Length: 440
Image 1 (tube, rainbow, N blue to C red):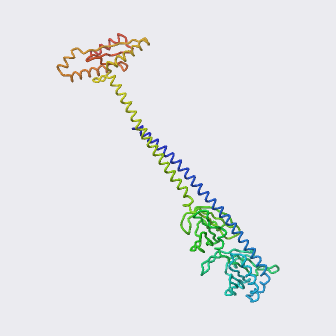
Image 2: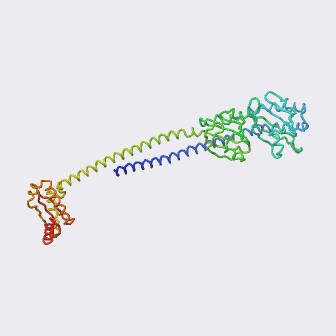
Image 3: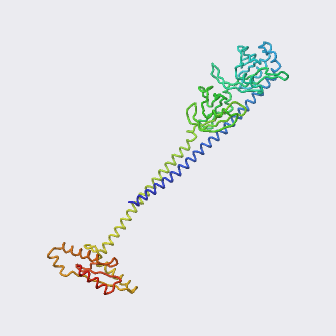
């Protein structure tokens, strides 16, 4: 039973070893899948940031042209809007607005932040002329940072359409005229940026997001209208917003759908925008989980086979031990007298021949004692065969108690017994015989 338990224990240990190895390999492959997804998303985020920077450089070229065209007119607007000057500026802006699909409107403010001229896709904007825009970020930032020539604002949301937009503004500073002459800004729809990033087709659950310096969502691919303009509550994003540049990757919980996602954050250099590229952990690990199920099934199968083999080995061992025990019992029965439990006649002659040959080889003496119970038939007749059997047993026990371990007692007949005494001379044998006679 113990050995069979050893087989089962070894099978379990082997199964645990295989299971542990498979678990290590599964964990290692999971880390590889996650790290690969992180690196892919980081590469996409970096490329997306470069594309965004390139697109805004194109906007900047347009803004430089507008700056050069309106710079000479700005001094006449320092005290407020003037119809003739505004008409001239609007004519310039109407030509420029068609040069880039992102631009939905232009606006110009004087040094005091008063809106003096502007156009949208439909023509000049008249309702805002004379309005104070000095509190707007696209003006206030440049007014408070005299060393900066341009600025990208955070996210704004239109009241009616709920479209998210941001402004690219440039300071108007003329040579020979100190200080800020005014600010030009271009209103840019964030949704137009989508063409830069494709359809996020790198994974079924892939997503690209652009957030501003305050963490507000400018753009999300695929579109999430309910999230536009809202703050992206990524705890990991807070660290990124403090940096001027850089990137990092992490497993995050999406603030939009609550899914765990493998996210890469990349701060666009020189811009107040962070690109977030993410993909669902569930999808990324889908193939890994499928493979894991196959591995688990394989391990279970192997452990089952090991336990089955251990059970079969235990059964075979049990059968072998039973056969050996039966063979030993048969051998014992063949050599032992059934009644007295000592050697029988057949075994006696085998042992006698062996001891005789050994005595001849070694030259040491060998003695033989013969014991016969006189009138034993009378005991059987008077007291019965059971009593006679007890007499024979008692004689054997007494004889065995008075001889050495190397001596051999055997029953060679009904009431006849023999004792082989190795390494015993005649005188010593006589002493043993007398002691047995007296005792019996």
